[in-house]
Length: 202
Image (cartoon, rainbow, N blue to C red; front, side, top):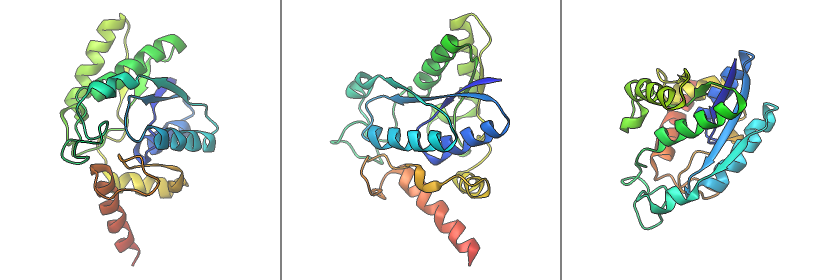
């Protein structure tokens, strides 16, 4: 099966990509620069992870989207945690992933959303409806996979450890700084999960 994998360089999309690769799917990693503050760090992480898996990622540049969208993930003057929502981001990702898939005859798109969604575009209902509308838009059946949707961050970190994914290759901070900010949603979620895992080892 040929699959476009939406890859951000974060632990969730990286674990998802590794799980799909282990099923011997033909993967087409796609990184999308939508003008996020962390684009450079994410792209570098995406390339490291893909190199580890012997994959070649494609980069799509739509920075103009982020320049006009009010979000703490794209604008320095907004709170990185309280203004973390990027309206329609995942729908945009899936649409662009499907367009890329159409070009390379890969009609399955994989997105790394987890359980306990924070935003409306991270739910099973959203994935189902996005699959329907994108299939209608292309005139072919598109399948959207969300293989981690029943898992949380702790689960994905466990999978990374179990299957030998170098966590240090990934990047999970919305600030774009070399050292994680500890204030964004992504940082807080990962730090909390790492704390649980470290306590399990004691």
